[in-house]
Length: 77
Image (cartoon, rainbow, N blue to C red; front, side, top):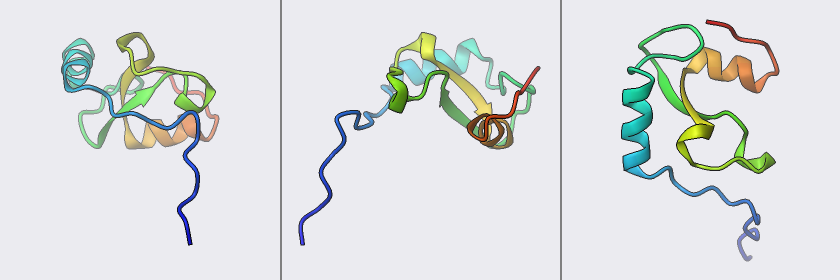
């Protein structure tokens, strides 16, 4: 059995220097609720919809806010 073909929108890792910039810009807090726990890098425009790994398309969200965003719920800070 072969492996599944890779999607043309295969994810690439976010470069470490970009992660450091985003972390500093967002002050190590969730952009939606201000939490400092369970933090994740989030693509504002998902890679699957043409989003990139540049700093303008990345933000820090906590897990609950990221899951709410993925579910289509509105999150506000």
